[in-house]
Length: 123
Image (cartoon, rainbow, N blue to C red; front, top):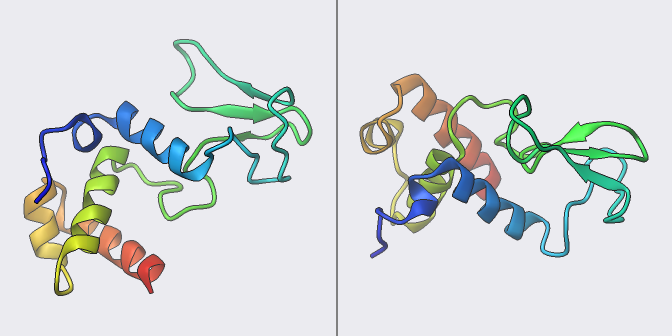
């Protein structure tokens, strides 16, 4: 059993930080050019930028932890993606989209999209 009340499953910022630790244990790496030099990667900060946005000074392209993953381009909050991946990985049988739709409080179409992407990654 796992606790659904922890911040990882309820806060997008905590989920983003968790994904950054998993994907980049030694610091951010540009998915466009592969640059991992901490002095050549700049983190954007401010009210007008989205949280977790970085810019590579080598290729001059912005990126975040979701670039190059199944989460890229999704409008579904990160904490719901993390919970969906955990539920689908822990579930004994294949979790269907209708069940995910009810558990995560997302539309059925979004749940279908999530199950399809997560299934493809798990294969």
